[in-house]
Image (cartoon, rainbow, N blue to C red):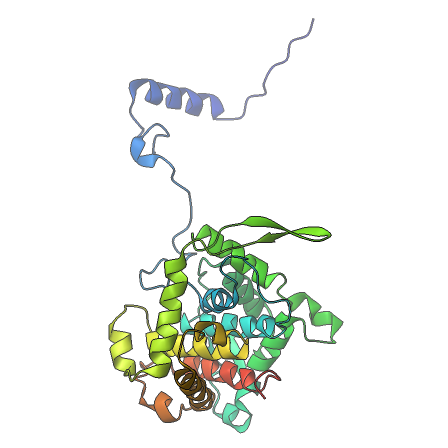
Length: 321
């Protein structure tokens, strides 16, 4: 009868023996972490150079905040009649990458000859963010030819007749954002029956998170607050500009009114008028009006120009006209 033997690999015997000896004595070899070391429990190997782990990164992305505003708290889904939010979410992806310093306008003085939304953008920092959708978009931008802000939003939304560029479309963005919010403890997943089929829904689990967003929206739209005061209240860079950009994107996505439901009619009207002003001020470069009063850190001008270009694209959506 033949016996089955395990083939030896060069060097495997000695290394295995040394590991067994180390584990039996409870000690690790110099420079090697023992798997039995309590300090090594639940450790995941990763390259710190690949992922950005700065402490001033916001908990929620612009896309997630806009999605939360449009989500029905108990039902856990968006309005079936809202066909604007998908396009606005792609715009939020571009703005989020710009706020995090990953992309910027191509530094070319001739770019001013072209409309803001038609100026080319490029990747200036390819370090991963840790957010799946952002990293997917970042990789596409890095590997492709330089294109304009409007072109990238169109392509990621699937708004193209060029079959060669259909692969740039980001699919199931809303569902993937919802699952990301589930992982962050903001939403939970449930199954809901809709007549002939079952659908996964994502009701709000952490109501305080959405309440904070609504409070921030109302504060910025109906009270007098200075941008510097808002920026000083949090370590996240460009806090005021991030917030008003999210508000403008929510307006373009037709979900902003969900945050203003509890305001008096006159305050609600004031809030919408304020959004119109913000859209006009921040969709040009350099910023105008209130936007012109912002303190823009040196070196971030080209990235914030991308934000202005995205808002310029959103102002041209049919939902706003």
